[in-house]
Image 1: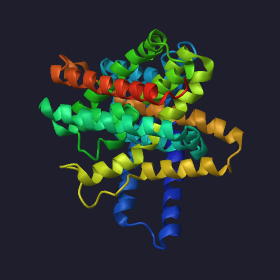
Image 2: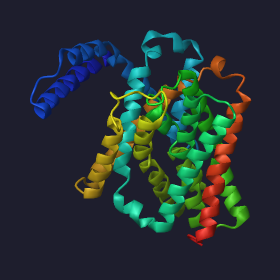
Image 3: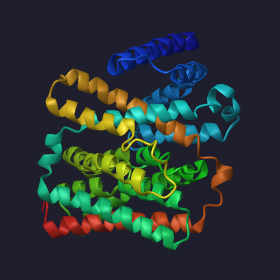
Image 4: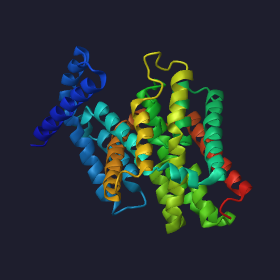
Length: 361
């Protein structure tokens, strides 16, 4: 029954794709595209497992809110791929489906970020965000090269640690032509270190004597994953969550320009056939504009927020499916060193800037 519904959904969505393309371009889609769409019909059923895992993660997150649905979904994927379930054809053939769902989720994140929220952070906040992202990315890239790591892996870690974790890694993995093992390593590192920061940042903020507002800004500017920032903000205080998330989403907004730069400057990146900006980054910018316009009622935004989390969780499940124990153990010392240094750069730079500008004191 589920596969039948999926087939109907696929047929409807592909028909819509053909109609939209003909309307926008004035000509029917190419035979090549039609053949591709027909081939992809077989993979439509692979949407079932990721979406089911995402729904399970959402349900479990109400029981264990500290972890959040994204981390839970990633853990589910890791458990599945390292068990016998990972060999089932309907589950093993997840890659294309989960990448697509994750990219949709990244695009939909824009609906959470009205431009007014970015402006409300103020010039000081924008400086903290921009300098932290720049310092973390460039510092991580420099150290990674000095450690002798492959450029693709270094760029994945630099992007994930400076922007928004696994979602950012997924956004640039094709651009930098990263190997799947490197994607798994980068995701594992961003999950490990970001999860540790959930407790570390609120605790250190108390030791240093930061106000709740300063602690929230520090959390949003330094912690890797969106879900991890939300968890840390809840430990700081109820009022800190919104501010921490606003700062974090300000970092997410820098994913578009960073992706564009990588597409044009990274050695070994896809050539002239690669768009300047991937489609889902364009969609992200459009989503920000739609949210800023105020056209969508709050009820629609609330539903979109849940669907965004569902899509991201489905993508996280797919990334978790790439974390195979046999590929990761033992963890290379150079990778651990780079992840540690990158975390220190992000946390140290953002903390120094918060203290320097006295923001929220």
